[in-house]
Length: 261
Image (cartoon, rainbow, N blue to C red; front, side, top):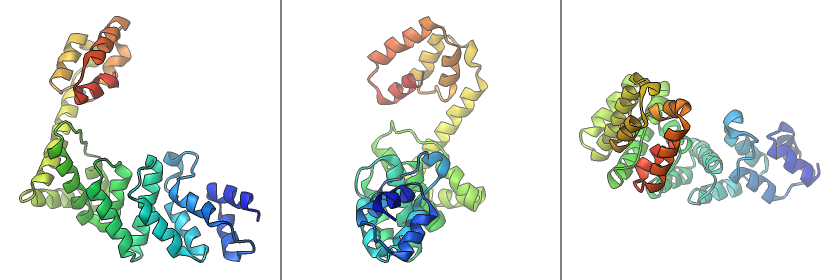
C-alpha cells in the first residue's frame, strides 16, 4: 500500500490500514500515524464518535506503540482544537486503563493547569477513575468557579456520571465530599442555581414577554433558557433594541445572554 493510500485509509478509520500495519510490507512513515493520533480525522466527530480505540489499535499494530504513546502524553499540555484535545485525552485514558501510569499522571497534571476544558475531556476522568474521577474534575471546576463567580456551569457531568453509576451514588459521593471541600460545594451550588433558573424559565411563556421584561431578566441574571424562545417570535424593532444593548454591554456573563438572542 502506497503512503498516500495508507494515509487515506487511516484518516477514514478503515480496517485495511490496521491490516497493512500488521503485514508491514511497506512501513508507512511515522508522521502519518502520529498525525492521526494527535488530530481527529473524522469528517463529523459528533456522528462518528471517538477514534481513540482505533488509533490505539494502529499504535499497537505499528510495532512501536511506546513512541506514539509518549507523543500523545506530551501533547496533552498543548492548546489544540476541541476534537483533537478530546481524542488525545481519550487515547491517554485508554493507555492509563492499560496500566500506563505516565498517562494517568499527565491527565491529572493537565487538569490542574487548565482553566477551560470541554465535557468530553471531563468524561475521560470519570470513565478512567469512576466516582473518584468525578470528584477530581468537580473539585477543579469548583476551584475555577471560586476564582471567577461569573463562570457558568450546568449539570452535564452529573447526568453523565448518573447514567453510569446511578443518581443516588453520585449525589451521595458529591454531597459527602462537599461537607469538607469548599470547591465541590461551590460546584454544586452553581449547578443548583442553573437548574433553578432553567426551571423558572420553562414556566414562562416567551411570547408573552416584552423586551423590557427580557432585559430585566438579563440584568438580574435570571434569563435561563427563555432567550432562544423569545428571540424566535420577537419583532425586528425589539431585536434592534437588544442589539444596541449588546453593543453597550461589558459584563461577560450578560454579553453571553445577549449573544443568545
